[in-house]
Length: 227
Image 1 (cartoon, one colour):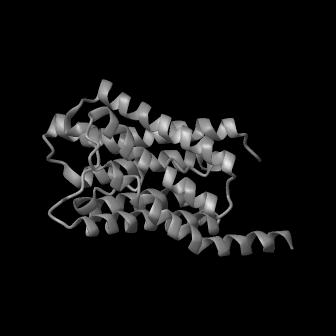
Image 2 (cartoon, helix red, strand yellow):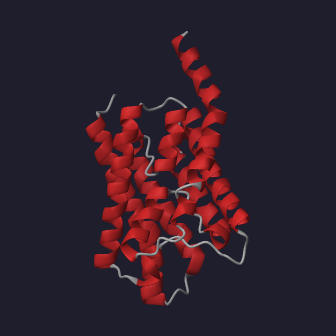
């Protein structure tokens, strides 16, 4: 079944809204209620759960991007058109902004609304490289799921799992955003924008690299389907 651009827009908006509430709201909730004691493991589990909801609810409609960097990867491989990129970007950014507004109004304003923060005990080169790597691994898992037709029902587990693992093992270095929309919304609402450039460059670098690596595979797959 083919879905309209409006249906895709709505699915992406709602999915990104949920993701940002879970991903940033968990950090704010931890700061508000537990004084930050739950830490990175709690921040890793929350987006995993959000992506389980999002992928299984909206994957058939929009492929469940919820992330502008992922959208660019899908464009490179030919899964979406230039016009659809506009719909995706608009939905993801609006959904993220609404998510941060929800967090501010209903959860709290501590921890800069869950803004991503790199660890400057490490060099900026390492921080940027780790963020590229985290984003590339996410895109790679997503493409593997698409290429294998959803891993027989485990697509949400795989995609949510790689996000959770990236956060668990890499957030202490780069902040592990992997998502420019998720990074943008809390940064704008909190006014903490000094590190935003990292999360609007590194994720795109990672997903673009993987997009070009997978482009040939998907072209061959589509050609085989037409034979």
